[in-house]
Amino acid sequence: MKARVLVFLKSTVLDPQGQTVRSALNGLGYREVADVRQGKCFDIVIADGVTRDQAQKDIEALAHDVLANPVIEEYTVELTD
Image 1: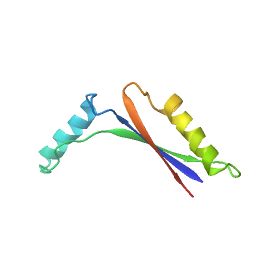
Image 2 (image 1 turned 45 degrees about the horizontal axis):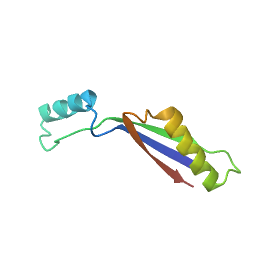
Image 3 (image 1 turned 90 degrees about the horizontal axis):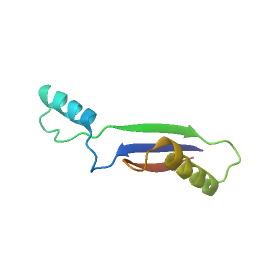
Image 4 (image 1 turned 90 degrees about the vertical axis):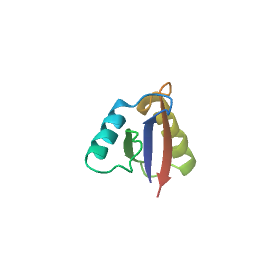
């Protein structure tokens, strides 16, 4: 089983890197790009024998406690087989 954790700054937090990317894309002629939010992606392989429910709980805790700063970031967890 695998997990993917996506971490992004909350919409209320300024994202200067995303704004720089948006500006660069607009400068390259991609004027339809109105906004860019930069984030992080973590692909995690779960050990054999771990149940889906346990993996969900463990990865949620890992994302909240280690991978994201819940004060300024939000995250999503996806489990795949």
